[in-house]
Length: 259
Ligand SMILES: Nc1ncnc2c1ncn2[C@@H]1O[C@H](COP(=O)(O)OP(=O)(O)OP(=O)(O)O)[C@@H](O)[C@H]1O
Ligand SMILES: [Mg+2]
Image (cartoon, rainbow, N blue to C red):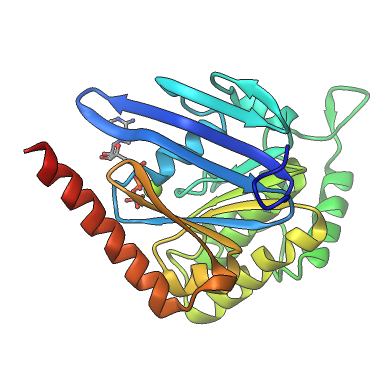
């Protein structure tokens, strides 16, 4: 499937709505994720960003709308279906098991076994070491339970796991939210390397400068709606700021016209 500019679309969400009781978390939201590109979603707290990506990772079902993965239409996905399509998500809360070490987390739920039932620790450590080296992730001792690692190291383990377990699309929800400057730069560089490694990326961030640094395409969300879409190559960070505030005005105008 191609978009209007001839780019290959890996996945798209079309006219997705989702309510939690009286809260309209998403209203008619549509996005397209191009293959081997970095797509970003920006928006204020509670604007529906995490809900949108949970729909793409199969964690929750939309009330209406459609999902297309490599051209195949779905009304909703399950985590298993998302996995089968090569989609892996790094959630805002990371979902790491703090009591397991790095290898234990990289292989969490997909452990390598010998003869079908004995855990093959040797291979899991070897593969973890190779993976971290390939991604330039520096964790001195792989047998440390991840609960003792730094915020940035934990983030790297979560991204490493997504890269290991997902084969085509990596979804990252606020990947550098709890990080210092150095750790953020390392994580941004890791994310920027993903398209060259054959991945499509969908990243959520509050940080305009991070988004501007890493993304090819940026969607702006407001109160559950996708209110704008911009290509990074065509704007400056200042213009992106203006587009985001224009999104606010657009929503205000809408609610004004309802009154
Ligand atoms: N499971 C749930 N039950 C009830 N309400 C929910 C649930 N999940 C999300 N919401 C509500 O839906 C809205 C959108 O939430 P969502 O987590 O998608 O926002 P977000 O854009 O990711 O925000 P943040 O930037 O703070 O992470 C919010 O008003 C939130 O309170
Ligand atoms: Mg969120």
